Image 1 (cartoon, helix red, strand yellow):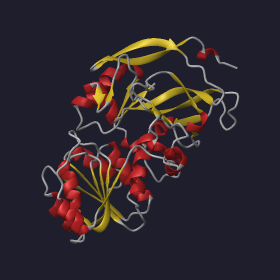
Image 2 (cartoon, one colour; image 1 turned 90 degrees about the horizontal axis):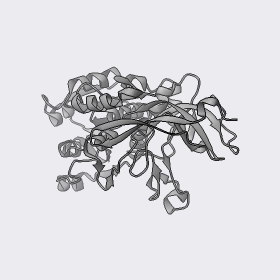
Image 3 (cartoon, rainbow, N blue to C red; image 1 turned 120 degrees about the vertical axis):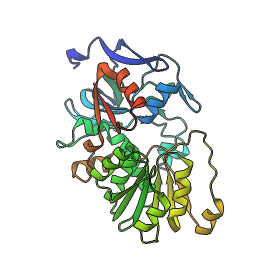
Length: 352
C-alpha cells in the first residue's frame, strides 16, 4: 500500500549550470517489484560532486543540465516491491549507489565495481539523490542496525572506498602504514587500516586542522607537509625502516614520489586520488629497485556489510569525520562553502 506522503511530487535539487543549484518538483518514483522506495534523510557531499559543480565534468563524464548531484545516501524504506522479502517499511538503510549489469566478465568474477555498464548515482548522465525519495534495487539497500544512524548510513559509501583501499594494499595485522591526505577518504582509509589490525598509521597533509582531525580519530602521528620534510620526518618516526604500506588519496605527484621513497622493499602503494592532469613523473628506477607493487582503487566491491558492522561495533567513528551539516534548502551554500573553505570543511552532509 502506498503511503500518502508518497503520492504526487517530490522536491529535487538540480544543477542548472556551473555553480548553480535550483529546486524543482518531480514525480515520486515508483518502485519496481525488486526495488524499495527510500525516503532520503542524509546525503554526503563527495569530492566528485564538487568537481561536477565547479567544472561541469570529470574527464569524459560531462554534465548535461539539469543534473542531480549526490551519491552518498542514507534513509528509511517507505515502500517495498512485491518481490522484496528482506526489507520492510520503516527499515533504515544505506544505499550502494552503483547498479551493475551482472552479466559481464567483471560481474561474473565478483569484480562488479569494474563493470563497464554500471549505472551510478550522480555520474553523468545518471542523476544523483539530492532529492526526497529514490527507488533503488533492494539488494543494494543494506539494513542498518539500531545503533547506526542514517547519517552514518550515508557515510558508508566513502568508508567502503577506504576499506577497498586497505584490501587492495593487502593490509594485515601488525603493519605500519602512511596515508597521504587527511580529507574524508584519507581519514576513512586510516580508520579502515586500524580495523584491519595495523599497529601504527601516520597521516600526511598540508592543513593542520585536517591533521588535528586525524589525531582526534586515532592517527598514530601526523606530518604537516607545509612545514615539515615528509621523508625525513617519516623515516625518523619509523627508526629508518619505512612503512609496510602507503595509501595515497590526494592525487598529488609529490605525495606519490614520497610514498615510493618511504615504503619498504617489496611492499604495496595504493593509489586512490586522481591527479589533475592524469599524468605523473615518478622515479621508476627506485620503484624497480624496491620491487614496489602499485595498486589502484575504483570505488569498491563486497564492502557494505563489513563496513556497517565496523561502525556498529564501534571500531569506526564515522560521525567524527563530519564537520558540517546543511539543510536541504542550503545545497548551493554547502557547495560554495566546500569550495571556498576547503581547509576547515573535512566532510559536509546534506540533511534532506
